[in-house]
Amino acid sequence: MSKDKAPAEPESNDERANAEPERFDPEEEASLISESNSHKAEANALFTSGKYETAINKYDEAVAVCPNYLDYELAVLRSNIAACHLKLEEWKEAISNATTALDGLDRLEGQEKEKEDRTPTAGDTKDAETNDAEAEIISAGATKAGPALLSNPDENSAEIARQKRRDDIARIRAKALMRRARARSELGGWSNLEGAIEDYKRLAGMTNLTAVDKRIVNAQLRALPPLAKAAQEKETAEMWAKLKELGNGILKPFGLSTDNFQMVKDEKTGGYSMNFKAGGDK
Image 1 (cartoon, helix red, strand yellow):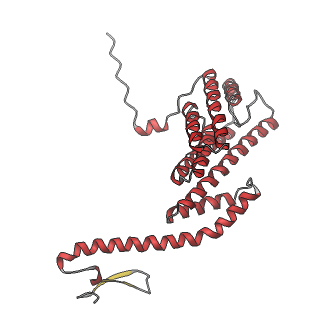
Image 2 (tube, one colour):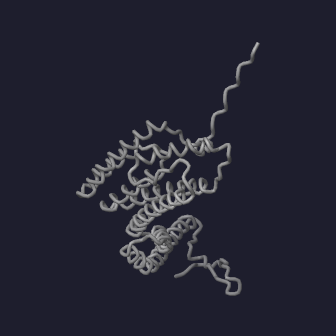
Image 3 (cartoon, one colour):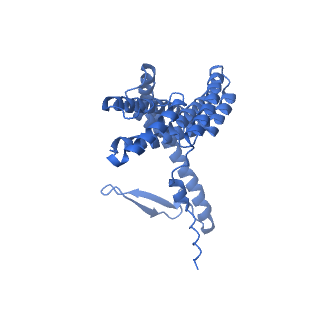
């Protein structure tokens, strides 16, 4: 008598997060991409006419039908949504969508690098040809997507295709970084201003910026550091004031206050020690 097969162990959250997303067959995928691109085209027109809220809704529809493993197409949509939120001065939403776009591009860049580093063996030739055919179908349906990979391309054609893909990724990355940096600087606060500085530093190292964007980047890298320092000093002072208020509330039943304690810096070591002063400041 055969034994019953033991039930499979349920996947952990980490396993589900790292699992390869389920892919559609090429025909269904092409149909979904076409529908997503149709929504995106409508959203682009709405953005051009200044109807930013309606454009966001249309971009959201494009995101909803786009296969969730197409990081490039989704990054384009998220970057465009960030642009809409900038127009509406919705800084937090702009930051969130631009960050999502950049995260997707990071994943895609890693996948592209793995593809370039992978050298198919003779036994892998059939699988490689199948993947190339699927890539061609996927790319044909996507607006501004990377070029289709050819079956058995010569070395020069393959390198041209890879460079075009890298250029596309870099172009969307620059747009998303510019939008996130702008939103962070407008939202303000020490953390956001420091984040904006980091974004502008990354942009300063990119070679695909327009002349206008270069001027903006250089101007912001001059203007933001003193603003970030001032925000840091303000937030630090506010934090110490709150801590002092909390400390006074704790010490009050004992007839003490934070004025009874003094932080003294040791000039030799740079460390601090706490001294007690009876009576506190008067």
